[in-house]
Amino acid sequence: MRLVIMADTHVPKRARDLPPALWDAVDAADVVFHAGDWVDVALLDALEARSARLVGVYGNNDGSELRARLPEVFHGEFDGLRVAMVHETGTSKGREQRCAAAYPDTDLLIFGHSHIPWDTEFNGLRLLNPGSPTDRRRQPYATFMTALVTEGALGTVNLHRVER
Image (tube, rainbow, N blue to C red; front, side, top):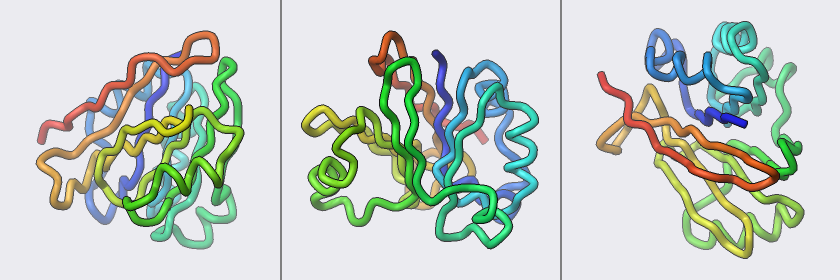
Protein backbone atom coordinates (compact mmCIF):
# COMPACT_ATOMS: atom_id res chain seq x y z
CA MET A 1 0.00 0.00 0.00
CA ARG A 2 1.47 3.34 -1.10
CA LEU A 3 0.93 6.35 1.17
CA VAL A 4 1.39 10.07 0.62
CA ILE A 5 1.68 12.17 3.76
CA MET A 6 1.33 15.96 3.80
CA ALA A 7 0.42 18.73 6.20
CA ASP A 8 0.38 22.50 6.48
CA THR A 9 -0.39 23.20 2.83
CA HIS A 10 -2.01 26.59 3.57
CA VAL A 11 -3.45 26.80 0.03
CA PRO A 12 -4.10 29.45 -1.27
CA LYS A 13 -2.50 31.65 1.42
CA ARG A 14 1.08 30.29 1.14
CA ALA A 15 0.85 28.84 -2.38
CA ARG A 16 -1.66 28.85 -5.21
CA ASP A 17 -1.63 25.06 -5.49
CA LEU A 18 0.26 21.98 -4.45
CA PRO A 19 3.59 21.37 -6.23
CA PRO A 20 3.42 19.15 -9.36
CA ALA A 21 5.61 16.46 -7.74
CA LEU A 22 3.13 16.16 -4.88
CA TRP A 23 0.17 15.91 -7.28
CA ASP A 24 2.05 13.14 -9.11
CA ALA A 25 2.54 11.31 -5.81
CA VAL A 26 -1.16 11.75 -4.98
CA ASP A 27 -2.09 10.23 -8.34
CA ALA A 28 0.08 7.16 -7.62
CA ALA A 29 -0.97 6.65 -3.98
CA ASP A 30 -3.43 4.21 -2.49
CA VAL A 31 -4.04 6.50 0.50
CA VAL A 32 -3.35 10.21 0.91
CA PHE A 33 -3.03 11.68 4.43
CA HIS A 34 -3.34 15.41 5.16
CA ALA A 35 -2.57 16.39 8.76
CA GLY A 36 -4.32 19.76 8.81
CA ASP A 37 -3.95 23.43 7.99
CA TRP A 38 -5.59 23.15 4.59
CA VAL A 39 -6.94 26.75 4.96
CA ASP A 40 -9.46 26.50 2.09
CA VAL A 41 -12.07 23.83 1.37
CA ALA A 42 -11.20 23.95 -2.36
CA LEU A 43 -8.03 21.92 -1.70
CA LEU A 44 -10.03 19.32 0.22
CA ASP A 45 -12.39 19.02 -2.75
CA ALA A 46 -9.50 18.77 -5.22
CA LEU A 47 -7.72 16.08 -3.18
CA GLU A 48 -10.94 14.12 -2.73
CA ALA A 49 -11.47 14.17 -6.49
CA ARG A 50 -7.94 13.01 -7.27
CA SER A 51 -7.12 10.60 -4.45
CA ALA A 52 -7.93 6.90 -4.45
CA ARG A 53 -8.60 7.44 -0.72
CA LEU A 54 -8.15 10.64 1.26
CA VAL A 55 -7.83 10.86 5.04
CA GLY A 56 -7.65 14.27 6.66
CA VAL A 57 -7.93 16.16 9.93
CA TYR A 58 -8.36 19.85 10.54
CA GLY A 59 -5.68 22.14 11.91
CA ASN A 60 -5.59 25.36 13.89
CA ASN A 61 -5.80 27.50 10.72
CA ASP A 62 -8.86 25.69 9.34
CA GLY A 63 -12.24 27.39 9.58
CA SER A 64 -15.72 26.13 10.24
CA GLU A 65 -16.35 24.71 6.75
CA LEU A 66 -13.30 22.42 6.98
CA ARG A 67 -14.04 21.55 10.61
CA ALA A 68 -17.56 20.49 9.61
CA ARG A 69 -16.11 17.95 7.14
CA LEU A 70 -12.98 16.73 8.96
CA PRO A 71 -12.29 15.31 12.41
CA GLU A 72 -9.76 16.71 14.84
CA VAL A 73 -8.26 13.23 15.32
CA PHE A 74 -8.37 10.25 12.96
CA HIS A 75 -7.96 6.57 13.89
CA GLY A 76 -7.93 3.79 11.31
CA GLU A 77 -6.26 0.63 10.10
CA PHE A 78 -4.50 0.19 6.78
CA ASP A 79 -3.40 -3.28 5.75
CA GLY A 80 -3.09 -4.10 9.46
CA LEU A 81 -1.17 -0.92 10.38
CA ARG A 82 -2.94 1.05 13.14
CA VAL A 83 -2.74 4.75 12.24
CA ALA A 84 -3.74 7.90 14.10
CA MET A 85 -3.46 11.44 12.79
CA VAL A 86 -3.77 14.81 14.51
CA HIS A 87 -2.55 18.29 13.62
CA GLU A 88 -0.85 19.33 16.87
CA THR A 89 1.18 17.26 19.35
CA GLY A 90 2.65 20.04 21.48
CA THR A 91 6.29 20.95 21.92
CA SER A 92 9.06 18.70 20.64
CA LYS A 93 10.41 18.12 24.17
CA GLY A 94 8.81 14.93 25.45
CA ARG A 95 6.74 14.43 22.28
CA GLU A 96 7.43 10.71 21.93
CA GLN A 97 6.45 9.91 25.52
CA ARG A 98 3.31 12.10 25.40
CA CYS A 99 2.15 10.62 22.12
CA ALA A 100 2.84 7.02 23.16
CA ALA A 101 0.66 7.62 26.24
CA ALA A 102 -2.07 9.40 24.25
CA TYR A 103 -2.18 6.85 21.40
CA PRO A 104 -1.44 3.48 23.07
CA ASP A 105 -3.01 1.24 20.41
CA THR A 106 -1.30 2.94 17.49
CA ASP A 107 1.62 1.91 15.27
CA LEU A 108 1.93 5.19 13.34
CA LEU A 109 1.06 8.74 14.40
CA ILE A 110 0.99 11.36 11.65
CA PHE A 111 1.03 15.00 12.71
CA GLY A 112 1.78 18.49 11.41
CA HIS A 113 1.70 22.07 12.71
CA SER A 114 5.44 22.79 13.05
CA HIS A 115 6.33 22.64 9.32
CA ILE A 116 9.40 20.70 10.50
CA PRO A 117 9.90 17.14 9.21
CA TRP A 118 9.98 14.58 12.02
CA ASP A 119 10.61 10.83 11.99
CA THR A 120 11.14 9.09 15.30
CA GLU A 121 10.06 5.92 17.06
CA PHE A 122 9.30 5.30 20.73
CA ASN A 123 8.03 2.05 22.30
CA GLY A 124 6.76 0.79 18.94
CA LEU A 125 5.06 4.07 17.95
CA ARG A 126 6.43 5.72 14.80
CA LEU A 127 5.87 9.48 14.65
CA LEU A 128 5.92 11.23 11.27
CA ASN A 129 5.57 14.89 10.41
CA PRO A 130 6.00 15.54 6.68
CA GLY A 131 6.84 19.22 7.04
CA SER A 132 5.08 21.49 4.55
CA PRO A 133 5.16 21.24 0.74
CA THR A 134 4.29 24.92 0.34
CA ASP A 135 5.61 26.85 3.37
CA ARG A 136 9.07 25.78 4.48
CA ARG A 137 9.40 28.57 7.04
CA ARG A 138 12.91 28.20 8.51
CA GLN A 139 13.52 24.79 6.92
CA PRO A 140 15.93 24.52 3.98
CA TYR A 141 13.28 22.85 1.80
CA ALA A 142 9.55 22.45 1.50
CA THR A 143 8.74 18.73 1.99
CA PHE A 144 6.23 15.88 1.98
CA MET A 145 6.53 12.15 2.66
CA THR A 146 5.72 8.89 0.96
CA ALA A 147 5.67 5.50 2.65
CA LEU A 148 4.91 1.85 2.02
CA VAL A 149 2.77 -0.43 4.18
CA THR A 150 3.12 -4.19 3.77
CA GLU A 151 1.33 -6.80 5.87
CA GLY A 152 0.70 -4.47 8.78
CA ALA A 153 4.19 -3.00 8.87
CA LEU A 154 5.38 0.44 7.90
CA GLY A 155 8.20 -0.03 5.41
CA THR A 156 10.24 2.55 3.61
CA VAL A 157 9.48 6.19 4.48
CA ASN A 158 10.85 8.84 2.13
CA LEU A 159 11.08 12.57 2.76
CA HIS A 160 10.75 14.42 -0.55
CA ARG A 161 12.19 17.88 -1.12
CA VAL A 162 9.99 20.12 -3.20
CA GLU A 163 11.86 21.96 -5.92
CA ARG A 164 10.75 25.51 -6.55
